[in-house]
Image (cartoon, rainbow, N blue to C red; front, side):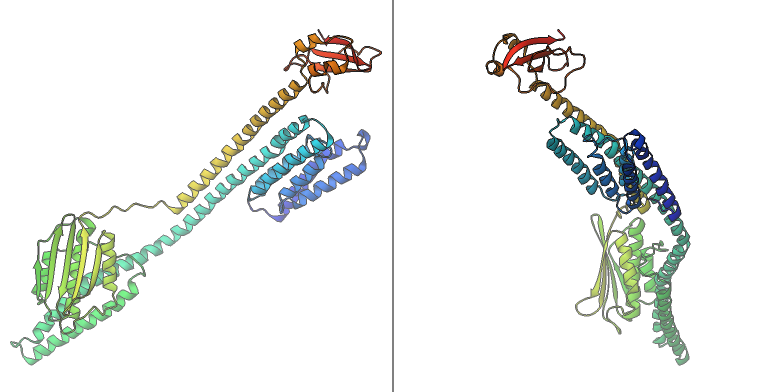
Length: 504
């Protein structure tokens, strides 16, 4: 339920108590056959029920039913009927679970049936109790359940709106972090590769015999500066790259063939085998990055080693393998793995797989298997939309229950009542042929086999008075479905002295 202030809750409880006490004051008036004790007891009980109704919603309903049943087996009392409706609604409105309520409804029906049997009355009052239970308790309880679910839906909507506002306020921060991650990826992909090629060129100049000692020393300083710049770039990438961020998907500026030619022109011993495939979208960008990362790692960690780039097409899949032999620093990359981690993410997003590791005989190999068509990403529905849709479905289900459950209960009670009524009437139905065989003067023992099991308990209104001088008269139904006419059989001394069809 929506949160309200304590003062408003106390005011609501006070008004509810006064409203429920009005029928008790009117029906238990000492001037109308009641007593002040009944008034005081009823008002006090209702006050206690209202006081505990928030903490124990079912307790007031159970107490009110217990106060109503001794007064009327039909559960309908003018003093407490309004309280039954109010507490039934509040129980559905305030209770989280329904199991306790269902047990209470079944218990009231069972106790009513037990009291009917103990008092020896017919089943008619019990059926009236079931009808009162359905209309005065179950129906308000279902309405309360629906109102509770509707309030939950409204509250969920406001909570989702507030959450969306908070998320929108954080969008700018997230976008800045993503941009920093993309910057880090671009720096690693482009600048790192370029610096590695500069170091390769400087290494070639450092050992060129056509240059003087000064030029060779300058080339060596250039190579060391490129290496130091690469290390500083790695540190900057560590600051800018967002932890767990996906690999950037910026398109490459050149083809795989142009990339290999540029590396070869820089002095790297690289060969290209196989035709260069044309892959669309993310698959083509991932292929370019795999070759670029393999060449960069070979130039950085295995200087002087030969590099072999092999491209192979196999139906709907393309395999790219970049392998370098042992060099002066042969071995797996020692850069912290940030490049390979980002590359693995890029290949995964393209629908492929990436493997890397040392090869027998020394060296390092990088292998990627890419599909020609990347799998289409299925956008997930927003969490807020899913939650709101679930809340709407719950409310619709509760609304349907609030409508069809009372109708189904009423229909079942009507069918049951009609069946019991027909059964009860048939037990007091005297067939016309059996009535015609009855003769005045016969003993009761002679005609008992032709009589029904039970005589009528409640006589129809408007019957003529019984004849004088008889011990007793018994009445039987002449038709199953109508109250009139009835057969009257009068006995004196155990013999039939008069028989009549009333009215006939």
